[in-house]
Length: 290
Ligand code: G1P
Image (cartoon, rainbow, N blue to C red; front, side, top):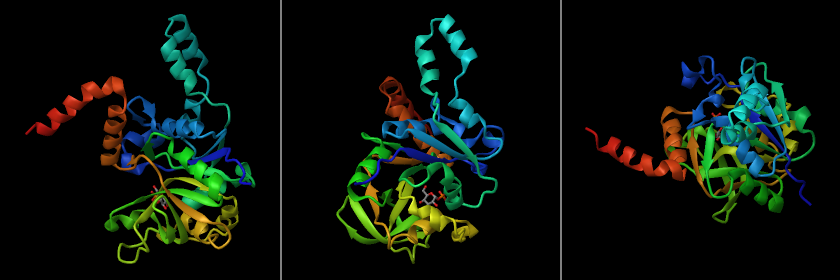
């Protein structure tokens, strides 16, 4: 019987250097896509997948992330007095009482960030969400992973096929078997060169993991880029627990790049009926402009 996934780890300690100067004061996870901070989309996806506890692996100076999910009594009172019920619901909808924060003192890599959450996760399966990867789908991406995990157990991560020249940006699966939806891996490589990549099946920022990985991350072995890589820790557990990549239903937008961020704004805008009708002709006009 596979244990239920109740906790999600969100690594948010990064400096967000690619988005300077926007990230000089505002954490990159707080930059909005339309009207919601990027991190709120991740939280909403996790809640829709049944996650109950949220563990932020954060850094000093990024307190506004947890503040965003705290009650705002002054603002709430004013909205109440003005009868702004819809706005009040938006503010209250962004409140969570089951948040824990752990500080990652040094940016030693994603594997290290996840390891920092070990005491708060304990010995149960857990999710990892990288908020930079936003997914637009019918069924929340993490829910799809949790459903697959209930059947196969072990580690289940979201994957997609990427162009071969991009393998050096991702964790890549060495595929053992593949039914077109679920691919079972016999190995994993972090950011391999296109010539040596064992496949083009790439991990994107959604994971459901067996806690066995913590013991491996605890060894603090450095990998690609001199960082402690989550992919490497997972690779070293592959003989003990099954590792599956799920080709999820939906589309991923990489908010970690400028172009991906603009694309995400357009895609999420077009997905909102009240915006789509106005946005469509605008985008068309822009494209036709000389
Ligand atoms: C991280 C992981 C990588 C994964 C990617 C997904 O890389 O290390 O395995 O494929 O996230 O977005 P990063 O984007 O932090 O370089």
